[in-house]
Length: 308
Ligand SMILES: [Fe+2]
Image 1 (cartoon, rainbow, N blue to C red):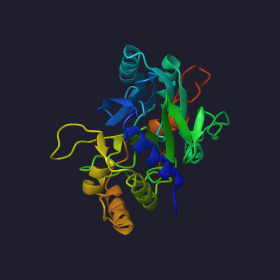
Image 2 (cartoon, helix red, strand yellow; image 1 turned 45 degrees about the vertical axis):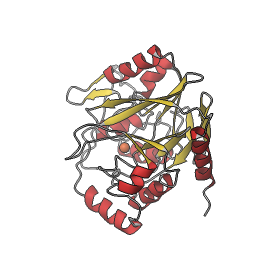
Image 3 (cartoon, protein in one colour; image 1 turned 135 degrees about the vertical axis):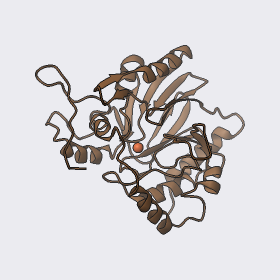
């Protein structure tokens, strides 16, 4: 089956890398508390940019949010005089709260995610018994991307690719020759994302990964998380299609779908629930907004008992 969106992404990457192409500039902010890499990407010709997968600091013991991480991003964006057009989420994260609404208040830009967020909102809206004020139609976001939808960061063309598996709503964003993969692939020596959250599917993740790894070998891949390894003591978040095809311990060239699914299921069974899962999903399903305050003016997060 021909994949015209992948063909369009390939064309975009090759034309960006060709003489005269303008590759986007990237800067990564790594949050050690949640192992999350937030990326700022901009077009050096127009100084217009996007922020991908930002983190709101959250202390669950105290129930307190703070903004050191987001403020560091704001400081960089202002110092470089970048105008933010987009706040992109690769998916509804289960391990950190998004800072996108906070960044939007300070920097502007449109908040966007994959269209299948609606399925995620439906599942988690039910789990958290959210009220009717929670629309579950994606309207909390400014734009919902379908597979192959195009947008731009300044003069640099961009394409959203639907890459489900970790969750139903994962998108990868191809911006010039840089691909922001979300939770599909991790560094080659760490492997791939888990698929045991509601709506996750190891076979789907395998197919999403094969799709990303069909992009040109020199494509720059920017990952959403890193956890180091027994033999690598520094955090890393950038790799290439060629490196992943050659060396990804779970998904290198030649691993069959059957073997991948068996590996993923066995490994997922050993993984603990992420520390911030419950706070994260009930905030991120609302595009990073906290639930409405109660009559006393205080905002609460819920802990559903014996549900997950
Ligand atoms: Fe995730």
